[in-house]
Length: 454
Ligand SMILES: Cc1cc2nc3c(=O)[nH]c(=O)nc-3n(C[C@H](O)[C@H](O)[C@H](O)COP(=O)(O)OP(=O)(O)OC[C@H]3O[C@@H](n4cnc5c(N)ncnc54)[C@H](O)[C@@H]3O)c2cc1C
Image (cartoon, rainbow, N blue to C red; front, side, top):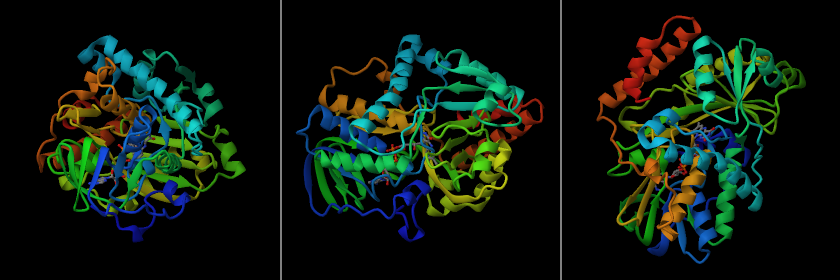
């Protein structure tokens, strides 16, 4: 699908930057050392680290729309060490040594993003103020405490400790995790595109890659030959031949409020700008107090489109806008009169087993990354470093790599996929309602896990 640009910016964050001036498309055949498909954070961090290791490399990034058009320019801006698969499961499959080593690498990645933003002078409101995850009923509280137990840096707060950071009236308590930062995501990805271009990388926009075959690509009808090819299109991989069922595009939607008045800001407890927050429900919601003192708030739960279709129309579903606004006010009633100024959405890419992937083919000459499952702002940076390692120094890759290179399992064919995912989403919402009402939810919870795989 090519985006209809008459419909305006793809997110509030991109709109803040104004209409992008498009780079020129690929107009002839090309020969490079590394060809990267997709100018999101995965593709651009890869280019950044390749150039850091080998400044002489000839790199081309081929982007169907413009840099930052995908999830990288639309997300909630949490720069976190989150991994989509729970740590106990990673440990049970790979052992504590590999799981701990991956966990440490992810934790360090938040600061690495901060270092890059600083060194490259990318003004993207990078603020490290931590994350507050609030429990609003007993099952949420038990899950949060269980999750916090294995984590060294987090603090468990009671209701009054929680209210000192963010006023959520029905909070039983919260877990505060200091290692998370936030950014204005479009500023990060567009700034990164400008910097890698200044460092010598060529970026072609309005350039659609229609075929990937080992080290040969077809882009806008031209042939691109490369020693290494990196496919970094995340959820859009579901549109590429041969990858249709390897990644599932699931919509996540967001709203942004007007800048908070002093009274509104006071009513929610004067949280620091840059704070990220959520509650412990199963159908994920996520918020950020932006540098401009707005609340950017998002959530999952929009229905999955038959055949993994990604469409501009889905970005605009009015029912989701109303749902998000009411979820936000239920969490932070102090905002009951706040104006919602923007609404948008985008797709996250989910693999069948929820593990993000770094797949190597053609003797390491073809690399593909996908499946961040909504936790990619920091992880794309780690993947970029790993890919640069695969290309320039393949004998020195980290011990946890097998967690990411594990063989893929495909999603079910339609209509099973459509029925399974959408029923799974309905069940997840039902589990949250039962938990809030203090009723047993485990039978539905178990069914939902079977359907969604998590
Ligand atoms: C609403 C929303 C909220 C999110 N919130 C968070 C968050 O707070 N924290 C977090 O860590 N993660 C979050 N995520 C996930 C995170 O944004 C992604 O994991 C990350 O941005 C993925 O980056 P990427 O470069 O791999 O993919 P993308 O940013 O999607 O980039 C892929 C690029 O490939 C291009 N492309 C597609 N097909 C082709 C083709 N055939 N030829 C050429 N180019 C092509 C696309 O136009 C796109 O620009 C969120 C995602 C969404 C949608």
